[in-house]
Image 1 (cartoon, rainbow, N blue to C red):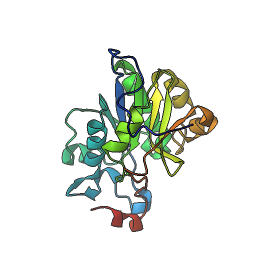
Image 2 (image 1 turned 90 degrees about the vertical axis):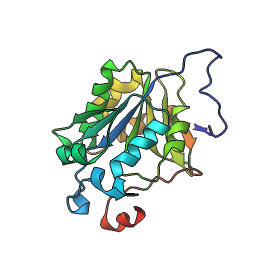
Image 3 (image 1 turned 120 degrees about the horizontal axis):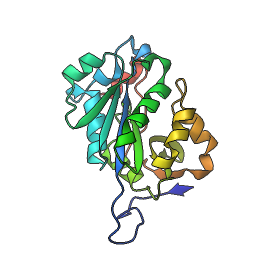
Length: 213
């Protein structure tokens, strides 16, 4: 299913209905193996650590509360990055891959009384608050499942209604994060086109560093 929420003024609920609480989950635990062991959270972008850019994208896109999952060089990230207003968890098993960080992030939201979680990766600086806001507005119910698309290709951010969290966590193993779950439930995903406001490239290799400012 492809949905364009560019002109949407709300997530399709009746007037007076309480807005959903969509928590932001930032996965920022990676050690940058292909970058010579430089933690991605601390890569420089516009004069500040890359993680701050991702936090602003979630916050300015309307997500809250915000939860950040750290791993590699967690103490250094805490010392150098401005994470005020974010709950922070440290994944001791970050080397196992993204799946463990996703599980930890969702588990940390158990007491947040959130209706959904919107998941963003720290190494995608081309994704800003506009794309976050569009995907957030795709929330319809506790079983919502939505993702940004770029030219029809699914990517991040991804939104999971709270009723889906247990199954998402159970499927999050290794470095695949939610990919297995999303593949198995692709017919239920609402795709939100974001190519006009964002780019979904990753900072994975030394060549990719040229995309940072």
